[in-house]
Image (cartoon, rainbow over the protein chains, first blue to last red):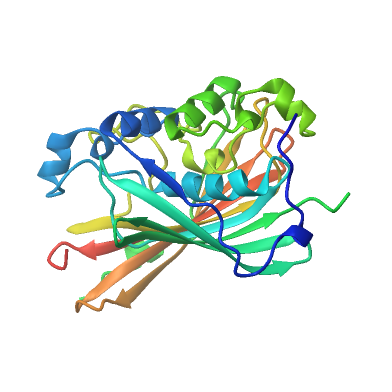
Amino acid sequence: MIKPTKSVAMVQPGEPLPMLERTFTTVDLMAYGAATWDWHRVHYDVDFAWAMKLPNVIIDGQAFGALFARAVLDWAGPQAFIERLSFKMKSMAFAGQTLRVESEVTQIRDRTVVLAQRLTSGSRLVSEAGTEVRLPAPA
Amino acid sequence: MTLLTDELKAWIGREVHYPAHEELGRASIRYFALAMGDENPLYLDEGYAREAGYPSVIAPPTLVCETCQYAHRRPEANGYIGHEWHLPITDCRMIRTGNDYEFMRTVLPEDRISVTWTLGDIVERGSSRGGTQLFVSSVARYKDAAGEVVAINRETVVYQPLEMA
């Protein structure tokens, strides 16, 4: 039994999406780097990070895209399709920090839902996204 | 002193193509989902994905833009193997400012994804901290075996002079 997918009739501008939280440990960062064939030391080698005058190894900013997409698809369902995801880096995030994705519907155009998304660590803004997801036509 | 030299301007419009070495593959999809802690069954369960209308498990949408699977070279001293322009810029640190992804279709494990990076523009702008910095915009186009574009990644990085950093 598959999870139902939302249709635009079920969505309202201003509607918040369920929050998504994810903590990246150094092990998670090693796994993410390996899974994306990105072996840059700054994501797992703390001596290298310290030499760069950073407090710890950095969470790869590209992983923010995956988090934004996941928050949308977990909400929208299996037949939703992300058409566009545009995100800007606002600050760095480091191993051990918990990232929180908050999302809100801003607009509905035909079958496409436009969302504003924010990724924070505590009170600090880490990244912001504008995302467009296409929902299936009503049955 | 301008950061945007004639030598640097000559890089605008350059293109590098990375052919696919193999199919994206179920292992890459499952590895990525595990690393992200994403248990969406569309990435892991063939039966579920087919019931949802797909021919098989599918790739998480941003995977093609995040992976350096297209690359095949020895890592640099810092470990990186993905695309880099190696621009003639010295005494600056590079910071990625953002990515703009556009997706045309769902990517499947059998897809052989080649990537073409194009250096779109280099612009010098003033910084709020004084002095100037360089904004370098690149576009990566991801194509399937038939040559159809499946995703586009517009990426901007900024080069800040180290004395400003």
